[in-house]
Image (cartoon, rainbow, N blue to C red; front, side, top):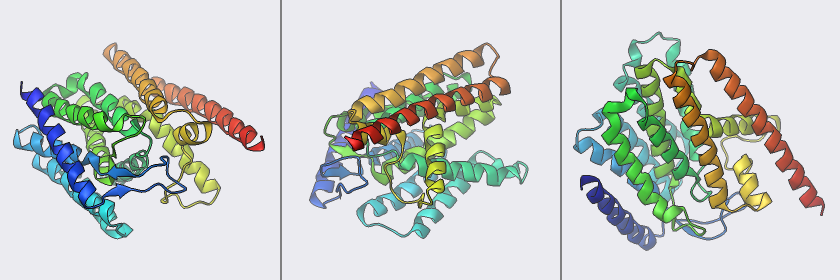
Length: 318
């Protein structure tokens, strides 16, 4: 009954936000780099940090993590309304990462480890932020990660928090997983969710002692890394919006529906996560398996990407 009440509450909050966003013109106008073609309400992902706040008041998440998520959410929401310079956004990310480190006691770890985790977490947050724009992909990918985390024995005590975040994804999905989305997550949603997922990944690795769970982010991770490498080779500004991800090619240039592309990414990641959970349960989630699977996934990705680019070239010739 509590979770049903929470769903109703989140739906009401989302609907109230839509009224506010419509009144104050908080919208996402399509441009040449957008993956959508119609004006859409921005910031519907505000229920993600709200869900974290609810979990905090219920005693399911610590204050440093709640503060970290709310901090990036507030700055990102301001940026959604009126674009900010990179400095305030970067500062909020640094402070949020510091709170994550504090909560997970990472400041007691070897000094060389801190900059490595810092760069990976900041990179993940910014890469995940670019995902918003294809209807359904952000929320479905996040939901797959949350469900996967829920199946791990190391996260048994965190199940209430994961359920609350899963429900927030379900509610947001009602308005986003559509042919014509009612709303996008906006920076307030995508960045706060990215930080939460990044925190939970680090927490899971620490609590389980198993680095292999990083594979839970492998599909989008591989796409993001290879896309960044390609853009660097082309001497493009990797911090600017673009349409160079494979999922963007599939949706924009090839013409697959946004929902289909979103389900392909989430579905493929779910299959991988299921395999990882099974392999971990029988004790074979070792370095050889992790490296081998990443290599196979990278080769599959490159093969598909090459085929898509070839198809795009033929389409342009015609």
